[in-house]
Image 1: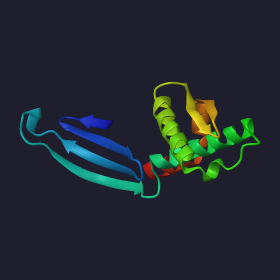
Image 2: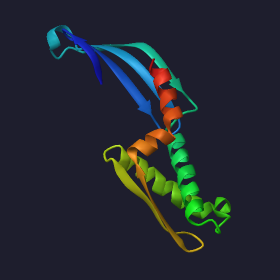
Image 3: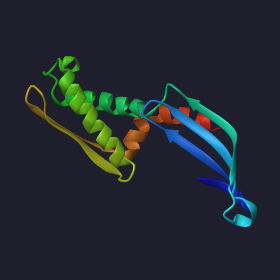
Amino acid sequence: MPVSSGRGQRTVLVFDLGGGTFDVSLLKINAGIDGMDNQGVFKVVATAGDTHLGGADFDNELVKYALKEFTRKHPSKTGISGNKKALQRLRTACERAKRVLWFTAQTTIEVDSLHDGIDFSTNITRSRFEELNKDLFSRCMKELE
């Protein structure tokens, strides 16, 4: 994402929120003499990040939300926390929902026969996702600053 540009020079912010880490870099890129095919040069101006923050943390918040919803809808069904296969299937559905929420305002987390033969489905909006993860987003903004 270009932050600013001048004659043959740009300042670029690289925001990388990977699966397990968050990295931010600020680069100055010189395109070369008069923008010709000369080899450009880039300089790293600043770096920041958090090795304990990543996309998996956002997934974890969605999984916690979905588990609360399952328990709310089916209070007599306990023991889902010990069902590793069900939790993995739920995590996969939550990861998918997270990706969909980047380009739509709402999606559904669905898992057929999640636990004890019960199908699970719940809607999640982007604003609810942002609310669930507001502390994580704040950590990202702190690193950007």
